[in-house]
Image 1 (cartoon, rainbow, N blue to C red):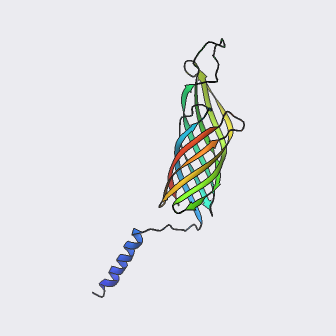
Image 2: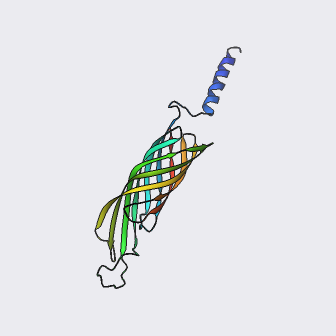
Length: 191
């Protein structure tokens, strides 16, 4: 029976360690985040439709830097500011079709409260906008590139190594068409 006690103690300790995992800090105060994003951009910019993409970044002592890519798959809708293709002022419903690909960098500061992370951040990069207009349906389109700034607030909830969250931002195009409000959900992992 004396031999069985160390074996039971070792087995009990092993089960306890495996049942209650702790975050490994092999990288020190560094967190690596990789996540997927999905959401919409709404504005007078026109219909951009549903967007899906991803992001990845590194957080060191709360300072966050990363990259971001999101593809708004596009939508078609009436164009309120377009004129009749014939130019005769006749009431014609002109439709516009738009989609966009955003890619760039983001930086911010993470404020952690227990399992919740709040991160004010600023994104900047290129917006590749594809547009087409026409009546009754959009015709051939044009592609334009614009520099964008996207101040945003991100909220994440840590679930072990996984996280879920949401972000809300203002997509600002200093040299392009109108700005947009962006809203996305996120899911990913932290190493």
